[in-house]
Amino acid sequence: MSGNPGANVSIDVTPDEATLIIAALRQFEPFWPSDMDALTHAELLAGIRSAVDGVTARLSS
Image 1 (spheres, rainbow, N blue to C red):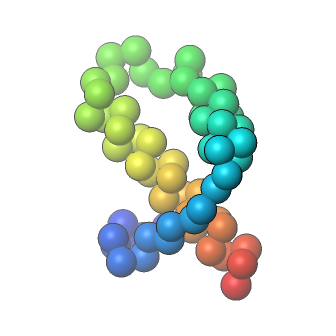
Image 2: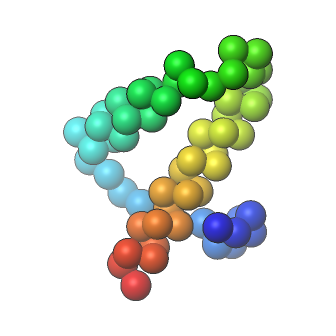
């Protein structure tokens, strides 16, 4: 995956798909460090989003 902002891909999801994605991400929340502040938490979620976007792009090409 690239850290280049130009490499990001946006995807449209339905409300049901968004709910499913959020539920899946929350499954990992107990494993996140308890000392993680809000900014680090947001960066982690952004990294996950970037990874999901990258996989989606590779699958569609």
